[in-house]
Image 1 (cartoon, rainbow, N blue to C red):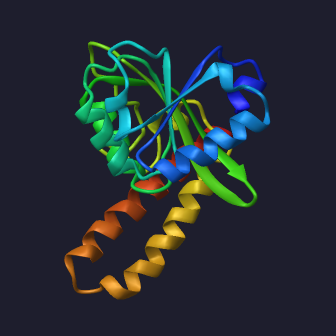
Image 2: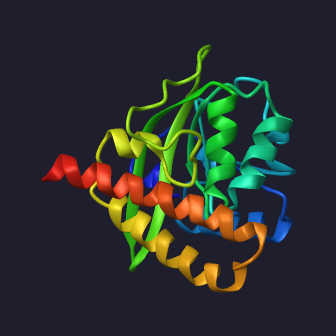
Length: 199
């Protein structure tokens, strides 16, 4: 609805695996009198789309693991992606990197006091170069937002460090202690690198 109202696109295909959720969206579109510009399709992920039917695909409000699964199940989809994973951001970021998607824009957005990672990607033939100074193989936050020096990236890193420190209390003496320690170190490395640039 927002994309159409702001004239960002001509036509939208709204998809959802849940018929009641799709019906709710359909009621909203009827209410704002835009039914002639929206198609509704009930189905699993991107399987309801034809190859090359869309210029852009927005996947929002779900986990990064599910996003990666949906993209993997529909490899013939070749469109710009706009993604906003609610959790497991590392899963979708790693999938995109390994499958030669280029992150073209990457932002940390603050809305009502909550931090969200929103990024866009396009399929390419070559793997995107790994930026200097960013922890190798670390996907919890975006390396492109690091390159772009996103003003909210340090706040996101600090938030994640706090979360990991809380989890660490229950992970002492387990394999999780090492994993959390590595994540905290990587996040601190990002903060330190950005702080040096801003100093």
